[in-house]
Image (tube, rainbow over all chains, first blue to last red; front, side):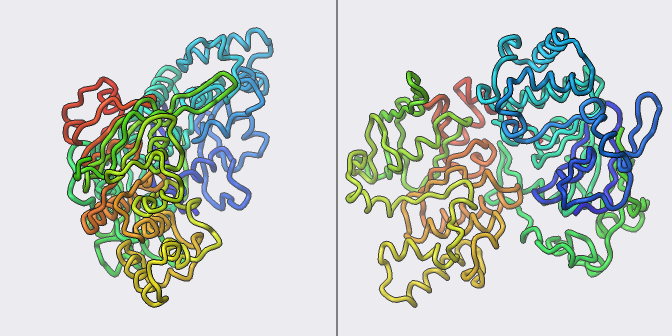
Length: 321
Length: 258
């Protein structure tokens, strides 16, 4: 489902993965803390975790118990739909406190409660002491997402994985939540991996962006570079199919066709059948990652050109921090 | 009533009971007019009452107060039997194409159902011709007729939903968040399709969305709603370039710029 992805997340950096539904972006995120659905497995590759203390470990080989220990304290995750990821039968304060209890970060009940309230205040929930006792259904979508962020942040993680954190929210709430995530990253020295399909979200919050299509990274670049100078035909197609707010063409330029259902057929480039460049090579040979400029790589025979440096993309590594 | 209006509503009110002593005013004194041939967009955050308004205008639910005129005729008090004629003229395309198509019906049956219900064609072959014509309009291939909804992607399902909606040549098409569940590429395809259909068939369209960018692409006039009330209604260019209401300004400032 996901083929040979290399991702590097720098300390305190916000990295984004964008792609359409079904491209494997969520699978990539879920593979990090081993919450893949049972039909999916990591078949090869490594995920190197660089601990601030200097220790290095491979997350792929970690046992269930060891990864459990890391979830919440090293790696935290927030999901798309806050209502389904919160327990409807539990007060939100107790749900957040659970993190402290399970990881034995704070065994004193009173102190734990104080820390939770402090955290609720940090994620800008008004009247945190009263809201501590609220049930999830009493809160609005934006508030629930704030609770999720508080829950993720209370263990003081080094990496926050946000899987479509704002998709279910209104634009106004989305703007607030994005601002909050950005601020949290700065104040708590945290890195973040943002998974989203929304180009606007990415351009707003991320420092570096990976564009994914059918389980492969098609283009990767710093945000300003990607939006200012998109190179891959897929990235260009994606960007041109987003309607603008102020100027719009008569008709939007779209990528022809649909995402192919049967992926096994492809030997060559995943995008070849929808690509405007009709070149034979693309149908038979998977393009390597070509280097365009310092941090800008694309996987395309045509645009990558022959003069670009070839970075061998065959090795499967996923690196965090 | 003026001829240029296709639909007009005045002072609509609708409240829902949310608890023993709680009422939510979903639509609070809304008046609007839809001009023939235009695309009027209703934007607002979730819970602002835009979908409720659309449902009231279609008479899917009844308003507590206010009146609705369709082509000069008052439809707000009409009994269901007389309303049927109007129903033919206004059709709806829904948000989730998966749940708005019957999973046990083939595409042919889905598209021909409105034609059968209205007994538009007396012979099977004529009906079949119309179905093929409709498929061509929404850019679907002929071979999909004998397949079921689950065999299609989200974008294709939405095309089927659109084909069903335009089968009876309606005058007014109401699109309730019709493109929100789709990926950007597919969304662009469907938006283009809606725009070209509007030009080809002279449709009037009431487009409900929370996405200001999508609305700016498709709408001629925009109506911004908040808490069940209209806060600003103006031509699209004015809304985007010279917003008057504070809330419109705030909404515009929240859109992430690329």
